[in-house]
Figure (cartoon, one colour):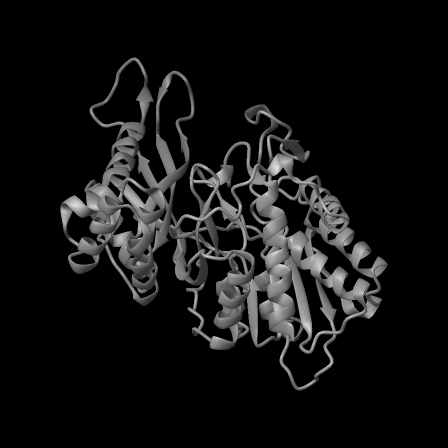
Length: 465
């Protein structure tokens, strides 16, 4: 998952979150959100089924019929299940809207965190905990919207479908979105889906700088980079060494800059960004769009990790394993290199690039399963895009809304298997440092969460009616 955005300056969310009094409906939502944060859904624990069951209890307590809440899991992965809940609309001819969110989270080790990652801590205007940004807010907000429909006795024009799945955060895990698309496409069937991937960005003072709708994403592919060696006794070092060979290969990958590229989505994104960014950045963006090989502009843009990733394929080492004994020369050294590939570039061509970059026949590069489908960019459907902008203007006046390509991966490619165009909606804003997503001490501003909840709920109501 990845939350992204462009730049602008307004004061809608700048008030200190800690000073906010929560409305009664926000208190109820916070309790739902807390329950999701404190349900450990990391793969090592496998609590997605548990989380889905808790959601099912809440939906049924709100009035959903048993027949409208479908739990699913496979015998091989009983803890990695999910649910699909349906809120029937009043117009049988209007195609449904699918609300997709993932229950699973990235692993979090208690010894590494300042606070318990699976206890929601309210501190300094933030909620801390694993999943507070990725993707428990969307899980809680979509669930809360269905509950609020029931509480108000309202029936949407379009049927709303809520799919909460597991496996998005771990490429080799059972993926609920893929399983549903391949085995139960009728449960997902919808005119379009709302998903993660969009978002907003705050400046250092907590002011929103812009919002973006995700209408495409990079292809995620892992590669194994491996060096092997006959090894021997460590008292007699060899001229070649598996760990050294691998280390040198990884340094070359780390320092390599893949070519700068643009497509229609990223050009629209950077055009908006250039209109509101400070002069040095704006000038560099315009120069780069005119001349992608301009070194000075590239040097400036690559200082920002998000802008760097949005303009090119990126590859980074994420896992490493080497050696077999303290007193033996390593016979094998292996690393995982995670690549986020710019749309239109094949995984095979990137593998060839990695071989060329390493330039050492003793180091082998292979593609690692699974091979994810390439995401299909949804059309810029006015029936979706116009309400996103209109409702954003209501809740975040003055904040520009643009389109963007996600630098991270979501479950959108799997929905393409069921022919469902998927849009990553905005509403949640993150700090310049990324709020610890996938890292340590993940956190969400309380005022951002509550304001985003109001926006997304209003957006769903607008699209459904």
